[in-house]
Every structure is written in C-alpha cells, then in structure tokens.
Image (cartoon, rainbow, N blue to C red):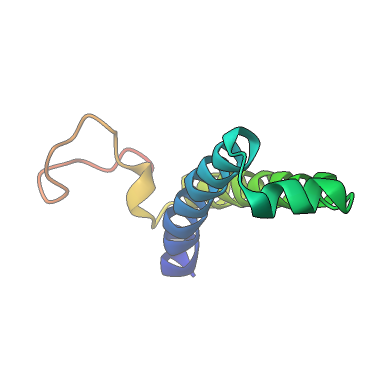
Amino acid sequence: MEKLFDKAVDYSSISFGFLLTVLAILLQTQTKAISATKGAGRFGDLILANKKGAVASIILVFISIGYLSINSESNMTTPFFCECKTNCVKYNK
C-alpha cells in the first residue's frame, strides 16, 4: 500500500505542475483555436476543468503524504535531512 501512495505523490505532483503549465499557456495564448473556443463560450468550461484537475491532484498529494507520514513502515518517516536511507535512523519505531 505504501508503494501505491508513494507513486500517487509522484504522479499527482507531476500532473499538478503540468496542469498549471497548461493553464498558464491557455490564459496567455491568442491562437485561432483559443479564439474560437472563447467565441463558442466554452473557454470558461475548459479553464474550470483544468482548475478542477489541478485541485484534485494537489488534494491527492496531501492525502498521500498524510497517509505516508502516519504509516511507520514508510520511507517518508525518515528525516528529510538524511542523505542515505541505509544510514538513517527511523525515529517512529
């Protein structure tokens, strides 16, 4: 289960950054496709869907980090200042 939440942090963080990048590009671009989308009245829906995806991905990051920090078997419980996982002492055991 820890691997699932560990990967959820990775993928959700990447998707959060990607969605914010797409949002910035959509808001700053003045192409024919964007103009047509604005003309059809669907641009707000596109931006809203993008924002909802970004919010969902950051919520998943926080939930996953919360689960990993509570679980004592996880690698997230080691101090962040440790450079090597084999030399670190786990304080939560």
